[in-house]
Length: 433
Image (cartoon, rainbow, N blue to C red; front, side):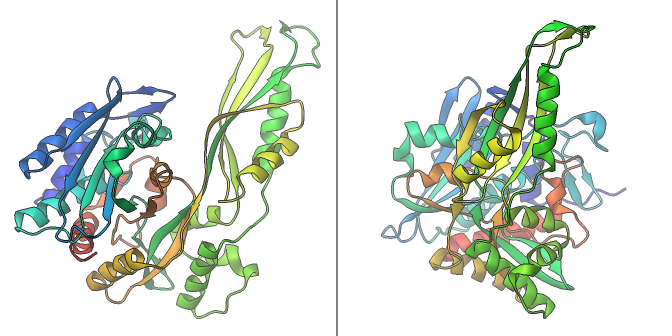
């Protein structure tokens, strides 16, 4: 099989994928230092002066400023993260850290989340500076550590300890927005203007420790199992934000049907593989993800616990927590491991118009719609400084690629053409906004 010539963006993304920056959570990580050093070397070759910030050994973020053509304009933060979630190589068709090229796709952990965007940022800035140009406004380039564990050692730490590096910035762009979907045979791009909140909680059941052969009604594992089952089978009420209603109206228009709220799930599902994201934007969710109990086969343990990934709708954080306690019952202790608020920005303003315009110049027939991301990004940390963040990692995707499944999934991959398209669109945006 002939390997195609790689674009500069693809080379950068491939090289970053080959640096294993797996983040296991709770402070356990391979670290981002090697990837950060790669970024620093590249940016330094462009004549920039990147700065390294280490929140803990190996937990490294990079900041660099690019002077704008109009210094009177507020600065724009353009950011990505250097860490990735772990990958079990035994489940993959390829080595997840080899950066393999196959069938016009770049395969590997981070191909979409989000070393592709890191590479697009780097190459867009390189294209601008090497052409002897400047972005219209000053840029603050940020490549953060630890996004996959809530940014405690990355964006959150930077905002808390070095807020001065973001001085003069009012807006930001980052991942999981600006990608294409096909609806009724028409292409649309989903621009991320909102994010659900994130609450990582721990459920704990207590009982009586005893020999495994005894009759035991006060069994912590049994109590926890009932609670986890009840929560996993429960569904939260639907609540549609202005962002989600605008999305659903746009999906209805593409299909030539009238919109009303009763069609919300049907319309969200009509976006094909992107429905994995869109259906989750209709209501809060709570998914059990980890279990921990016991230490020997013949010992009934005193406690049993479960980890739950809770994603409340913006503004529903407290109500979701209250509802979870009702579902699991008063005997189950709930401990919050990580907690942040949701974001919801209007689909309007100069930056939104600029992003829509950049996509339109490179794909004139496509529609751009707002949507709420069911996950979260480092934009939440920047929001603590009053910086309004959007998801804009533009990708013109093959219609048959299950893009949503690539995030934290097996055989993560992205089209080479898509990242080259994204680089061109991002460059356009930085030059004109």
